Length: 396
Image 1 (spheres, rainbow, N blue to C red):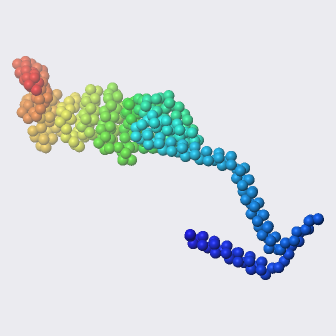
Image 2 (image 1 turned 180 degrees about the vertical axis):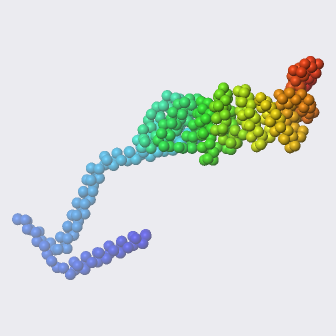
Image 3 (image 1 turned 90 degrees about the vertical axis):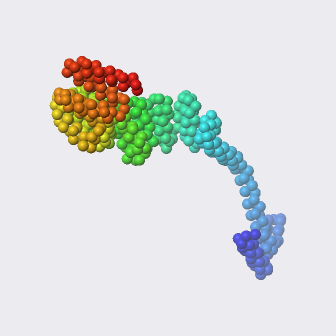
């Protein structure tokens, strides 16, 4: 027995003793007359009778009230039981979904939706499970069942992800735009938008979103660099017919992206095709100042334009740091051919052959020497270099 129970028993004994002492001190009588009846009793008996009557009436009223409330209590019990089962089904649906048992997850979600408060959450789980099973009609029915305002953002985000998975990037973007219109700038929404823009070839938007994800440290640096480079290359190719737009697009690229060797090489190549060799030369020089790259160095050989002399002079300054670089010698040879410096061109190209470190360089150099001798009318030397280039190609 607890201390509280002992205190109650002591209090009851004290009350009983008080009533006993009060009754011993009082000798009153009570007479009740209701002609022709007469009832004579002591005051103690009357008090006891009143108390007993009160107790009986209290018990009777409570019993009647319990009988009256029995249907309501039974209904409440059934409601609580139904809610408990629905909540258990909702937990089972979550467990089944994350365990990959999508059919069971949908079945449990249907049981959980029997309770009104679970309709939206069960609808989300059911929609995701149906989507994983490629049941589009059931997925849409589940999504339509989600009506709560608190679930609206979750519904749009889930719908966008489902549409992206179903190879419908435009529909996914529409859902994400509806989500963004409400002021939501969620990380998952930006990641989905990146995938959708990539699928739709919206390269400017891809670059914009990658920049946002980098600020939030939500993308791997290596993946970000690769994505930016790919987007930059596509954006440049889309403008390959307009030199002004091409230069504008290149300048709008992030610095680390536009000076990456592959991007700079592509921009220079496209500008050369548009007779903008001077712009191509500046791009290559800026990129080489950041990172020395053989392909980019060889591209410099085509950046002479109408006046190759400044390019020759700049390339010769690089020889101090790269004395036996075959790519640099090849570029200088190509520039000297454009300047009609035949002797220097021959010397540089023969140096490139001497230090060539891969077959492609050998074939490329022999071909350029053959073209030079052919333009000079020396058919024998031209044929010899063509044969040497073909032999190097066949051997490798």
